[in-house]
Length: 240
Ligand SMILES: [Mn+2]
Image 1 (cartoon, rainbow, N blue to C red):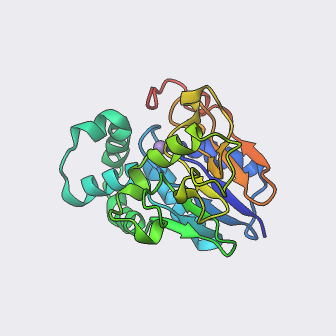
Image 2: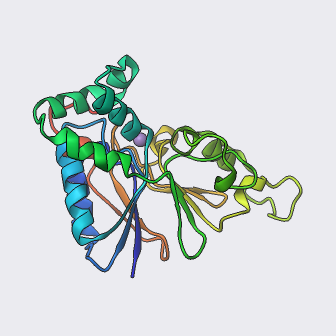
């Protein structure tokens, strides 16, 4: 069985289908989605429909992204969050406006998302990060799991040669052999492939912006990518 991790999709369903074909995904694979299914390209409803159907036939783990939570808040309360609209929410709003009936089923999808997942090898998967030095079970606020950027910043700024036995080594990083996250696009650093810092792997390759969507096999580290997603949505702006 392969364990495949999928980065932030941001309604780029065409890219998801393309990268799944390239990775030759089958029902034998375990699929771990890092969250941010919506907010970006025009196919929010179609993306969540596709993921819900995929869950019927494949082994899927769906983690919660900050954008999924913002979308759920809007679907549940019908209150417009201006900041959300400016950060990709407008495309999601428009997508649901074209398909009013989708929202009830989708609320169940968003509510069912997991804040984190730890596999049988103790590898940790979550959208953004955590701050408690003792690990995710000790986190004070669940929002951190899908909003935090300090885990990735810390891993990046760490001397990559520092020994795990050093008293200066961050305690946050010692609990899991590997940590897989999305949330902060590596395109901000001028990269377009999954990036590793310390034992943290960032799989968000900027699908909402000018980057591709990426899938990584956590055991072999083989990577598959879609075309840059904006090329699959001509005439749209995404989050640019
Ligand atoms: Mn994202």
